[in-house]
Image (cartoon, rainbow, N blue to C red):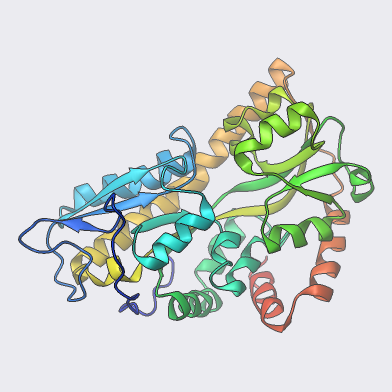
Length: 345
């Protein structure tokens, strides 16, 4: 999809002292790199950070494609990728993008909600029906308005967005309806939107860091969790969970963002090349995710490592969640939610 671009000249964040490891955009000694405010470009290397492993589609078909496409464009911009939360967890990285210490990041909407609350609504349960619905929204005027508000508030420019798969329940028993969540301690990420999602679904949310999730499930600290299939496989959760219940309750959003300082330091040609590179990745990631999911589900079914429960009463979950969100969102959140739903087919 081609994300609608508005606000070509990003508001620049205040100049901050660079971290000792030099995480701000760096360039040749002659031209001062991409962190300046004159937009003259020059040869520049931008750091791109994310939380995924190098085997996951968000890296293979997302971050790596962006880097490869920029190399082919030959406009003097290269990408250095830092996967697997090497530059910090989600909350740390978004703060570093705002400050200018990290150039580009791939983030979920709920993490971005820490610095601009309305964008977190994109991670509401059943807000999006599927990856195509998410793509239509990010092609819409409502998306452009939301992301411009995010940029005005933070100085951070959004280059594009894609769906990284639908989130599903896992547990040691099937979850076919909201009633099946009764008595289960379900792990949810520690963010306001995800915790609201748990309430909307009827789940008893237990907050556990993603890095500690396998051990928490193994030791029985929590009974189940929810994640996209690619995350479940990457964390080997099939070794400690018996069932995956296909609730399809949330489109796992990824937004590709760049700090205003790094964006403003690029020439127009470099900005166009970077935007085009992200557009290519946007087209590839959903297909890569779907291929990985199909392969993983087939492997689980063949091996018996995880039983796939495909008769979930999705409509029961959806109607309960929709009623809860409409009753509990504030006016601004509800406006974003309704704009998303208006793009549903």
